[in-house]
Length: 496
Image 1: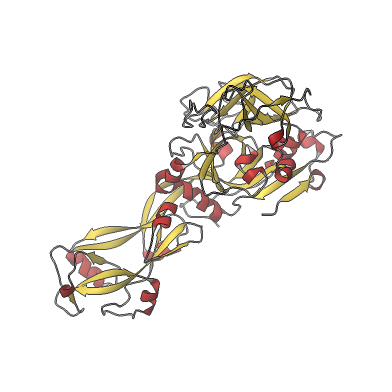
Image 2: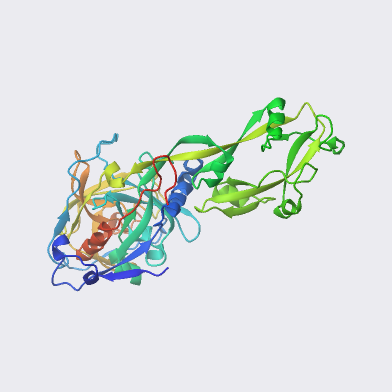
């Protein structure tokens, strides 16, 4: 996927916008599309919400090799000289939400995606204040494959995620922004990302419709069989409905359509058999139109036929079933069914910043300040001990080191560090300056990038983050102007 690299001078941004350093070389950033179209965004979100959040519960933390925790080396430098400090404040009025733990920000959650191996993964993240109330901040390696390659697939943000539930909606990524250095050189000095997300949505019940309405619907839909009696079945057949019967048949039970009380059954066949079948009432003739069923990825992988596997216009996994008919003698053990065509209705939950709020952001701040770092740690320590589950968020509080550090394996030269024992899974979690427990907001001044064992006892004891400098401010400012869309309309319909 080709990236769009945009110099600051071409973006038409004024120096007053973020007080970027006047004496610095014009920085650049990278922008990648995730799912700009509502249909693609809906498909990504539906993938995670389907089957009551089965894919969300299946996901595991983005996994570092816990036995290769690199030791940091102090560079001896102080705060990088990168211009004037700057800040964007969090919203003055926070959303009214019921959150049990008074210490936790409303804004934190998990981002979910599929990696290059097809594994379901998650990292930590937070929403941040922005012009369109639609930005999420996380580690760059939680968005961009290997730091610099293609973006991960089916990327979504779920604030306040817990056990397969998305209490405030699920927000599909539209565009991702990161540093030029990470994008081009896999340089973890730029291991951060801002993602503009579409409006969130939740499923909000179901609605029974006609087959014509069902066929036109691009959102969530399924067929639910309803058992009926013999009279309803005969009436359905007279009206050329798609009713059918099921039961055990013997070869001697097969009769023609004119046999007294003959019962019509459907038999699933391959597409070629269906295509060759005639239209009419005879045995082996076509039974209605092919039926398209939406299924999960696991169901799709496990299915062996005779139907045809595919995807629909929104990228959902489907199986198309083909049926022919046969007529059998009436039997007491036979059951009769009528297909019910059901639509899953989605509800727009609004912009993420309006729903859970957003953290402020700060750059070019002095090292050594107090920060509160949040995340969902889950990896074991290098010695195998596993104190965290990744189910609930944890935090560390303290002063960052007064020097920057380097880690040669990831081309790190100027990471800021914090004493903290959180492990992998906390990747992308926010570092907040001036955090207020009462307001649950502060100023984003880093995101967890790496984990370190400084005393070499096979335990993580430090975490590190890219230093938030003027380039971070420029990337944020570019992302700040990214516009996104509603995915579903007032009636739960998928918007174009």
